[in-house]
Image (cartoon, rainbow, N blue to C red; front, side, top):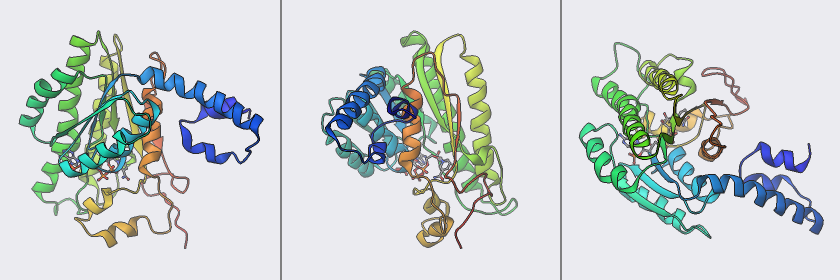
Length: 303
Ligand SMILES: NC(=O)c1ccc[n+]([C@@H]2O[C@H](COP(=O)([O-])OP(=O)(O)OC[C@H]3O[C@@H](n4cnc5c(N)ncnc54)[C@H](OP(=O)(O)O)[C@@H]3O)[C@@H](O)[C@H]2O)c1
């Protein structure tokens, strides 16, 4: 495959390491091709206001960083419940060489409807919005139906479903009233929303709800330039399993034993790739596995 095509197939920098040729001719061709590639994505994102929920860790934090690396003039609004972790993410982004955009952090619990009402007027109204990444989400426990606590059901539904829906409504209202019907919503679904598994009835059903909501919303907005994007990861190593096992790090590690899971950066690159396409291109639906996985329960483990 020619270099130019190879470059167009993937997103930003890490694949530079695939090339070991350091001759001046090669390096110059590489640099020209890279800057041509970067400028298309960078230009399309330039100056955009991008809200990432759950940006204190994992996929959300990696996505915020990837937006800033791809287009240094983006204005990022980072939200989560842990303010100290958000401030660390902000420090990492603002320290990126050449970053000229802005990073604003807000403590926001997406499961709290009152906070979201305030967020619409105080934050979206003030900063504007071009891209919403509905990433905040969690799973609690592996209990089977009949044994699941009401508190766990509530926290998963309120965060993964109600929070995502409320923020989507805020974004759609803003895109229609202030952006001339333009803007992006990226919803983090999961393989769990397509393939339910034992011990995951609540989490899987929240992600199935995200999928149905996202599909309806895409149909409802085809008379606008609003793009509705869903990304469904398989196994990604983040704090996700630590949260599932209520802080038991050893139990969480076992999930990835003998596996080579995706990294949060793998998903971040796909989110940024999707949002930085030409306005008429919608990367509507993406299922992403590590190479040893082919379904929720179809995971090959090295013995
Ligand atoms: N990891 C996987 O294998 C995997 C696979 C498929 C899909 N996903 C989805 O990917 C998304 C990100 O997960 P992750 O793997 O990056 O997990 P993670 O490392 O645990 O990060 C989850 C993020 O969500 C935030 N969050 C949780 N509850 C929140 C609330 N009520 N309000 C605001 N923020 C909240 C957390 O921040 P605070 O704690 O600071 O609030 C954190 O920043 C989730 O929607 C998850 O369902 C993950």
